[in-house]
Every structure is written in structure tokens, then in C-alpha cells.
Amino acid sequence: MPQISSNSFLISSDSLKWMIWKITEDVSFFETFPENWLLGESQKNSASQKKIESTAARFCLWNLCQQIAKGPWDLKKDERNRPYFDKSDYHISLSHSFPFVAAVISHKKPAGIDLERYGRNIEKIGPRFLNAEEWSRWHDKHADLTKAWTCKEAVYKAMGISGLSFQQDILLSSFDLNAFDIQVKERKISVIMEEFEHFVCSIAIEN
Image (cartoon, rainbow, N blue to C red; front, side, top):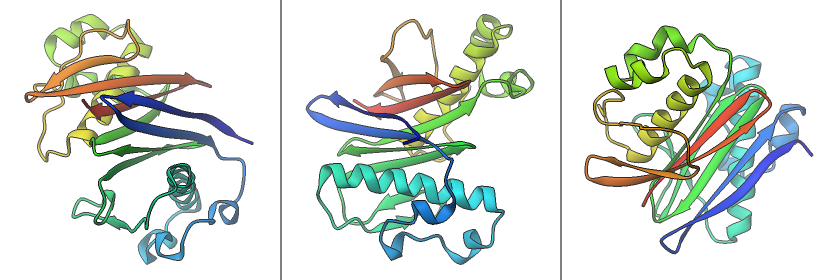
């Protein structure tokens, strides 16, 4: 089974669950969720890699839902094309970077997940998502730049605020602890990281 990680984390009595999966199967393997979870027409016609990534991420989410054993799970997309459950107090987030996909589900607390491969040209975009102090600290540390990107992306997804600034609003100090807390617009966010096979995954949840 190419499941890389399946974990849970307790935040103030509310649970957070996530799953990371390495894709080695074809798309039909992952289509075990309800019919109304199937991709829309625009995604069905997308490139085959993107289609299998999106389908596999939903497969991870469906498996997490079965662990909770509640429902119904009415999967929708908002105006920014982000998935959510209609009429539910569960928050969700998905991410994919071939060959890995990831999903997170949280009860009551907003959550976000993001995974990234080490090796992309993260130095080129670093000054656009880091403030001056962060860039000075990590500009020559590729792994930390990649971690910073996944952290800020996961926090951005958890916050759900359009226009939130990676540079000015989401401020990071270090990655010495796992998990660690940051303050974003008077909201406390906890961040957990996992590293595997030249990838890093960050999970953020409001505390």
C-alpha cells in the first residue's frame, strides 16, 4: 500500500486527521468515493496526470471520512474552486504534487495542507513570499525555503482570507520545533510538518 502517512493530532479537544499517498495506481483504483464526488467536466478533460492527482486526493479525503464514520459528506467547491463540505462543521483541504497527494480533515477548526518537492527553483520566488528578515535568514538554505513555502501555503488555506499577504501577514521564525504556533491576524495557527522521499508536507490548523 503506497500510503506514506496517516496521522491525527489533537488541538484543544478537536481532532485533525491527514493522509499522504504515493500514486502508483491508475485512476480507476481511486474512484471508490460517491458519484457526486467525481470530477467536473472541465477536470475530466484535463491532462491525465492532473486528473489522477485530483482523483487520488479525493480518495484520501474519502478514506479519512470513513475513519470518522459520520456524514453525509456533500462535497462542494466555493467561488475560489476550493473544496468544502456543505452543511458540515468539518473543514477540509487537499494538495498534490506528483507522485504524492494529501488530504486533511478537521472538526470545527479551519485547516490547510500543502506539499512540495525539494529541488524546485524556490530561490527564484523566495523574495516574493518571504519578508526581508525571513529572506535574510533562509536565502541560502534550500530546504528551509521549501518548508517556509509549504507552511505559508498551508496557513493561507487554513485562514481562508482572500488577499492575505504571505510576506506581511504570515510570519515565520524557525522550524526547530514540530509542531509550532504562529499568530496570524489575531488568530493562533498550529503547524505540523512531515518529510518523506524528497518532499515536505505542512499541515496548519487554527487553534
